[in-house]
Structures are given as structure tokens and as C-alpha cells.
Length: 301
Image 1 (tube, rainbow, N blue to C red):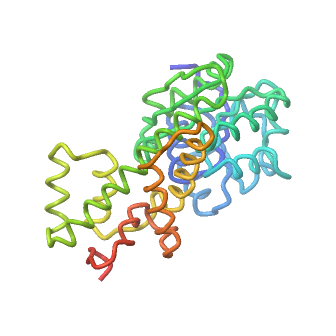
Image 2: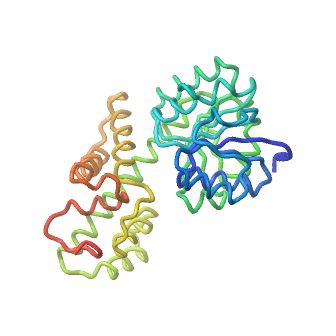
């Protein structure tokens, strides 16, 4: 365990993953502040022992050792760090920024270059594991960057991750690995939704179909996690349809940039885009199943 005493970290974005990461850092003994526009999330964080929380970094004392950026996309990360009230220019030289949003390699490289010009260390470090793993301090981190950034962020990585993959020294490698991972995650959700929709059309009880698959060879982590929501008729967003519109969009853009065909990812992207267009964009990503016509689903009748 890296030395946590006196270490100050700011978590930018206290959503499902960011809140979990922040709470894990608190349990590890780090002094943790948060930047989050939602007042209720700020209150929950402060009630858990957070040192400070604000809607904007302009309202914080920014003498942090590190910042962890857990927002939705590259645009939000750039705004939070380099916008009018951005955190980055107010961080001390030598502080480390952990970029943990899902973004393209090109976006990660461009943002890192501007942060490094300010004298900051940067780790391109997307994460996975969902809110449960985040709160347990057991995320998977896919990281690339200089050794100095890994060292500076060691207390954060120790607190938040069960597994840290050191992919290389070049910014953008971590982002690419996460994009490839999201190809699988999105395709698995789409395939699970298609299978459960077919079961519904065939008159197979969805709880029975779910039980069979989760005890057989066709199971996946995404099927087991997301299709449980379908069985329960629960479409409250943990990760929304529009998140996978974004992520699978990045997947298809990566394929185009590399002139590499991605037929399954392209089909899944079209399914999520169709679900968003049908008005389900802000529902849980399992709501991609709602675009299948002629079936009855729990909680939608």
C-alpha cells in the first residue's frame, strides 16, 4: 500500500463510478475532495467524510497531489480541466491527473499534451467494473503513461483498483484498450437483449430463460448483470443507453481509423442508436431490448 498520509486527491465527477472511487479513497485514508454539479451527490459525499465538495473547482483549494477525472466523455473532461473554471491550471506543478473517462486515443493524447504543458503528470487510465466494484475499491484500470505518473498516483490506484494493467508509456494506449473492451461490453448487452427478446416472443418465461443462461455456456458478465434488470422490469439507469451510443460510436470510429471491419460492433451500435431514437436513451442500457416489437416485457405492460 502506497503511503496515504497527507495525500490529497480531487475526484471530478461523483456519478456511479466516481462516487465509488471517492469513497474507496476515503476508506484508504486519503483526503478527498469532489467536483460535482449535482447537490444531492455532493451531500452524500460530504456525509461519508469527504473533505470538501463543490459544483466547480473554482470553489476549492486546489493544492492537490492528484486529480481523478471520472466524467462521461472527452468533452466533459476537457471542460472540467481546462474550461473557464477548470481545475488543471490551479493544480501545483508535479501533480498527477488520472484521465478515466472513455475517450478516443486521439482525444486522450490531445488533452494530455495540454496538461503536460502545465507541468502536470498524466495517466491515461480508463476504468471498468461498475458501481459495485468502484465502491469496493476493486475496479480494473487500463493505464498507460510515464512511470512518474504511476508513482504519483500509487495511493489512488491502491485505494480504487483490484487490478492495474500497465499497458505502456504512450498516452492513448489505455484509451484504446478501453474502447476495445467496450466493443465486447456493448455487443454482449445487445446479444443478451436479442436472446431475451426471442425468448419473450417464443413464450418462454424470462426468469426461467435467465436462470438457464446464467448456469450454462452462453452466459457473460454483461448478460448476468443487465438481463437481470430486464427480468425485474427495472430500467433505472446504472449505465444508460446513450452511454453505449457514445462508446460504440468510439468503437466504430476506431475501426474506421484503422481501416478494420467491425460487423458485430456496427450492428450493436445501430441497436443502441435505434433505442435512443425511440426515446430510451436515458434509461438503463438494457432498455435496448425495448426496440423489439411484438413482445411483452416485465414492467412495461
